[in-house]
Image 1: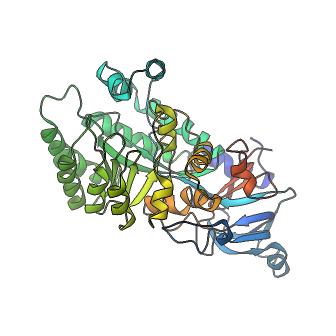
Image 2: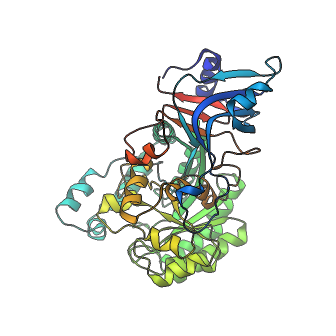
Image 3: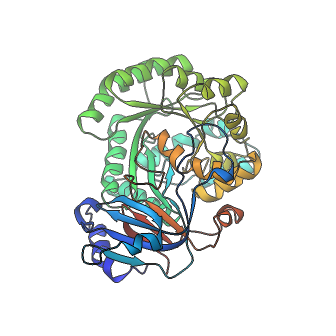
Length: 440
């Protein structure tokens, strides 16, 4: 991965575990010119979006200082007032289209083992639920993850985060949930915490100890959730391993009433909450809305009732097309959600079972085709609307005062990115103004 000479030392330090704030240039940097730059400014958090609303700057430049965007506009205008004695130039000599750094609001990239046998069984006609009952599914990954060392999980998480970076993702939500006992859940969250020091993207951890009821737990689902809420969650707070809590509402997981009590306790402790909702059984999103969760994720079987509730709330609906592709299930009714006035974020759901692909660009492109999403809606779903699902307002839009996270595609027009359905990958990625990936 060749890097410009001015960034070689920075890249070496990054690989040694230094954070960007420790090594970034204090002097401002003018980067450009870019053929096109999509700011994503001026687009609402909810509702449909026509491509004509996209703010596209031709022959653009970005001024970065201390990891933030100081200014943005026409490159020539910025250059004419540029003082080379006080700042540096990072000149671009190729045709590149810039978008904000991609935000993946839902992944499970911290795991050990493989579920290729599950995939074979699905192709032979077994359902996701049937596979779980035979000893496959989530529990299979739990057993492998429990056996893995902390270092193994750090390496696995780092490797997958680096792959997502090469696809333009600069912020990644990462869930626990393959431990399902206190020791391994803490080990997973610690692995995510440690991996976050070693990778360019920001890793946002979520406690999913309420993934399913552990098969080896000697008690009821209510008792398990009570133990997690009263013993594990306070420990996670003390160790500062996560500020987010998730629960899976489904026939093979936890009921809506169980989830409501559990999430209420998490909120009381100070956690932000999210919900695995409406994947195989509708209704979970109503709990998410009632408790004002940040997001309701999956939504493949959401009905008009759930769509209306989400559209009239501040809870961000998160579509996970990778799961629909992996399981051969319906897609989230994204078009209906947007037309009802709701928001829409799009995540990869990268996990070893239902969504092993992990390529958000491909998945978002496919969802756009089947749900008739505009390019603007698709871009919003993987940038600032996805950031909102993580309660992050400092990214997903390229504007003054925002994080300098941006991605360059080797094309002449922004439409080519999704026209090629994810085949064209980024050639450069900047994180907090530092060029952290360059293909050439």
